[in-house]
Image (cartoon, rainbow, N blue to C red; front, side, top):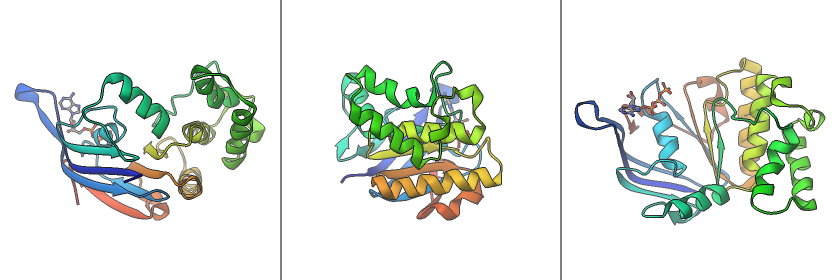
Length: 222
Ligand SMILES: Nc1ncnc2c1ncn2[C@@H]1O[C@H](COP(=O)(O)OP(=O)(O)OP(=O)(O)O)[C@@H](O)[C@H]1O
């Protein structure tokens, strides 16, 4: 299927005496245009779930399908292409490049895979307007607020038109109003771009913006 599908996914981290089952028999499907939130306490496996969902970690068992493509067994090169072409990531610290302006954060990855076209520039401008940052396009990350950085990271993640959008604790650095704004924006862009969005969070305030909410406890989805 398009979107994201996890079937019987398990992930064991470490080995020997310190081996931990971080994810245990997880079945989860996220359809295009849908936002699913997974909520769970610290250590419940949220980051691990995102890592296997985004083909950043190979599951110990089960299968992960991203936009109809199964992630195992694939070469490192094929995985890199899969991640680049099909997955957008918005991680906790926004991971913006300190030296680049907001506009460049969106355009430089295009440059790496070829020339920046007029269509790329138009798309970047459209996405920055959609996240309310057109007036900050020439700013660098240290000149932005926490919420603005998250919105820049969201726009960058959407630049390649990913089939799957993975979001880790989008609101950890934000106040309540900022949290609501980014959560609303993620859900709206998800519908608009018809990507399958998985958000992991412990922030219950943002759950109202998700189409579905699942709970993670000790690596198991309930
Ligand atoms: N390299 C590792 N070796 C062994 N166990 C690990 C390793 N990395 C993480 N773990 C354990 O796996 C479990 C899941 O970790 P994970 O980071 O996915 O949880 P989380 O829900 O994202 O936590 P938090 O909200 O605190 O970031 C935790 O119990 C953690 O202690």
